[in-house]
Image (tube, rainbow, N blue to C red; front, top):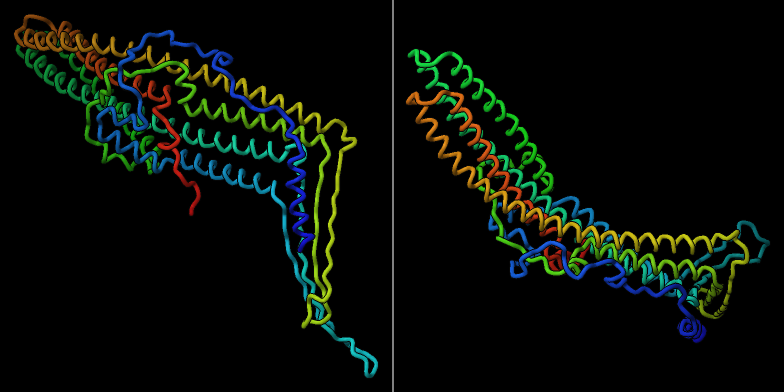
Amino acid sequence: MRLGLRLLAVPGVLALCGCVVGPNYHPPAPDALAVPRTYSVASDPSAQSATARWWSQFGDPDLTRLEEAGLAANLDIAQALSRLRQVREALTQARSAAMPTISASGGYTRTEAIAAPAGASLSGDSLTIAADAAYQVDLFGGRSRAIEAARAETDASRFDYGAVALTVQSTIASTYLQVRLLQANLANAQEARTNQTDNLQIADWRRQAGLISQFDVDLARTQLAQTTATIPQIESTLSQTIAALGVLLGRGPGALRAELAQSQPIPVGPAALAVGIPADVVRQRPDVRFAERSLAAATARIGVAEAALYPALSLGGSIGTGSAALSSPFDLITGQAFARIAQTIFDGGRLRSQVRSQRAATDGALARYKQSVLVALEDVENAVVALQAANRRQIQFDLAETSAASSAALARQQYRSGLIDYAALLITENLLITSRNGVAQARHDRAAALVQLYAALGGGWTDRDAIPDRTDNG
């Protein structure tokens, strides 16, 4: 027993004498990442800020319900959670690799004589019990760097989970907005078909009365047929979009048809959204933080590769008992201890090549981190510009729809009175359809730009809000 205690004490003493090879990781400074102090596009600093449940700021119960269901059942999120569980177990394995390994064994043997001289007894029992301990001393910090890398990879996987969740959230919102836009376009087409059916009937009556020629009737019939032809196309696209939304929620393609059958207005959302400063995005976006943690892991892996260049010291020991008499199995107790040091003399440059390879991987991880930061800043500025443009377009289309509705109503009255021909009515009717579809598109584009901006800012994402405390099945 004293021998075993001495063996377990030696690794701790040697570990204190060791050193950790490889570079120590320090996150790149914002200046090294080309992060500007301010955005190049103007924004409202007093506007509402993004929150983790940003979709609730649209004030649409259906959107909120779909988002909550998607977080619970989306299969991309389930896969990201599975990856997170695997990486957390890899961290546990990396930590256990730095601990001693202790094993025990036992054996029992019964010997019976098949044939023996008279009076001789060759039968008997024997029992052996043994315990072994082994430990590889972390002289140059290879195990420590492996644990450091595994811890960084676990953090990276957590941020990957958050990035997947944010992508799913924004995709659900965008798909839902597309459903409401298609429903608005369908309603506009159906209303236009009703008006054009009345216009065709009036044109036919006037032709029968000899007030107009067949030309006006054919023109009215052509317009009605063209409008009617657009309805099946819109219905088909709407059905496909609802099916895609169902799959996003981890459900069958037709699961949401009944729930979304009733047309609802396109949600408006807040009037403006604060974007803060560019450095906020570096801290907030989970995909950017994923890239940073991946860089940290790659840096730690350099130390793992460099530690393999140096000698490896292994310690071990065993203790065992053996007896030919079951009544006294501890009559004979033996123990042994060993220490072994190994150093690679020649490997054709394989180990040094692995170090160079890992340094190259770290350079690539740094480039990916810088790129993720720049792409994130680009996303924010593009979303701000898209939102500003959508606001201006919506104002103009609202004016156009008001004017077109007034003009179309007057044109119908004048056509019934015989003051204008059908060609003039056709122009005003087409302008009204275009304006109404334009209003719906502008409202959709504004809401979609808000979703785009929420996603670009990281959606108010936090570890506490996005990642469950436990990722196992226990």
